[in-house]
Image (tube, rainbow, N blue to C red; front, side, top):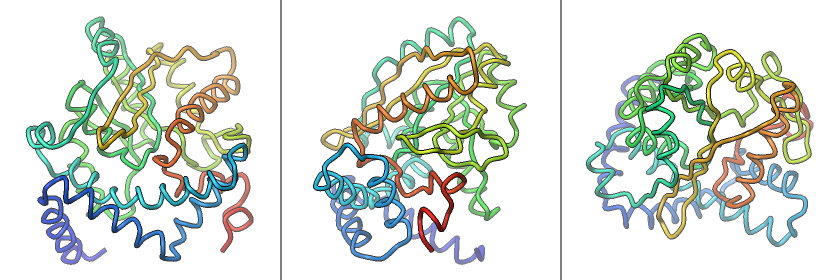
Length: 291
């Protein structure tokens, strides 16, 4: 993307998030309705994923979740802008949120234990990470953006509260952090290709599941935790809990991890990032998601 055009977009983006939070929420709903009426590919991916993954839900319920999911996506522009551009002070003043169980992580940190903190790809993932970094000393693992300019903006924004971030293709960096007793945020619930993944069911469908969490756990002897995020009456909740998964084999570990993540998604299904083509490597981009 042209640097001048990107700077113009960032300028208006920063202006937009200067609006009062109550206005942001109202505008995000209007924006979400507009997105829902347009034939975006991501809307199609969301619908296919919801229909395929939530088979035990009624058709009426799935239709409702799909609509809520697309409308909720209108908030991404605000939540991401807030997480990248606002100060900690402004976030604490304007965003209503609650951390539940963070003392467990603080205790691990006091004992100099490395913590691999797993979280899922919610629609508000960027704000989730910012809130976590504001309240806990944490590092992040990210996937680099194709645009170097945008990637720099993304990294700068994420590192406003995180102590540092590493590309997911640089495992040595975040393994070193864990061995040194640091806490590392990691979201493994996307399709990162077949090269470093094995096929494990996700919502009963074969999915390329990245092997990194198991390898990291084995090589660093770190503690494994999960933070679940959700919104209730415009208040953000982040709940921390320790994971005790079967480590006897890679596949069993990843199966249990996927099942656990599924259980959290099911509690607030419309907040999940269904727009990602989770099954593209196993079921095919065109075969499963269409052209």
